[in-house]
Image (cartoon, rainbow, N blue to C red; front, side, top):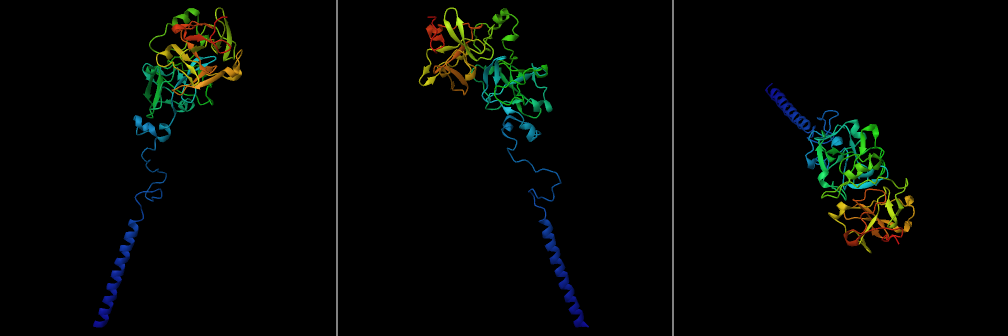
Length: 351
C-alpha cells in the first residue's frame, strides 16, 4: 500500500505540473491575441477608423485649421495662387485665380465685417477660394484689398475688398463666367472687390467721369469706355481724328507701346508704380481680330507669371486715363515714350 500510494501521489503531482504548464501557455497566447496597433486589431470596434497620421489634413493646418475639421471639409476649395485681371467682353475687368478661373462674390455675404453665408451644399456649388502661401496679388491688383476669413471648418478663405471669394463649379474652363448673375445674387469680382459690371452698368457719362479720376497711389480698376467696339472682337481698329487708325482692345481702349521696352528679347520695363497707370493689355484670341495682321499679334509672360498682349513683338498696354472708346490721352506722354499703335504695329502719327 505504501508503494502504491507513493506512485499515485507522484502521478498526481505530474498532472498538476502539466496543468500549470498548459495554463501558462494559454495565458501567453491570450496576451498576444490583441496587438496594440494595426488595421486587423480585434480590439477595435467595428466601423471605427484609425487615427490619421500627422499631416494627413494637408498644408491648411499651417494656418491654424480647427482640430475638429474633417479631412474633406479642410480640403474643400482651391488655393487662389497668383491672382490676375482679365478683361471680359461684357463684364470689363474680372478677377481670376492663378489658373485663370473667374472669382465671384455673394450678395448674402458681408464685407463689413467680412463674413461668409455660403456653406454646406452652397459651398459645393461655389467652392471657397483658399488663401494660403501661394496667394498673392498680380499685375493691376492692390494687395491691400486682399484679406481672409476663417470658415467654420477651419480653412482660410480669400477676401477681396472684404468680400469672400468663390469659384463656380460649372465654370469648366479658364475665362468662363457662367456664374455671373446666378440667382440674382452671384457676381463676378472686380479687382477691388466690387461687382464686375462692365461699361453697360454705368448710368451716364458724367458718372463715368466721376468714377475714373486721375491715377492715385493705389491701383484702380480699369476705366470703362462710354461706347463699345464691334461686338465679339478683341482687337480692332478705331479711326482717331488726329492720330489716324489705331488699335483698340475688346472694350475700346487704345493700345500703347512704351519706348523703354525691348522687342529682342521681348521685355517690359514698366514695373511698380508704372503699372498703376499703364495696365498690361490682355492677350487676344486670333479668331477675334479685325483690321490687324495676325502675324503681328502675340503674347509674353511677365515676371509675376501673368500674360500680356504683344504687338509687333513689343508689349502692349492700356492707359488708366482713357475714359471713352478710342480715347488716346496717353499718346506722347513721358516725353513721347508712350505711343498709340497703328495697324502696322508702329507709332500712330496721323500721317
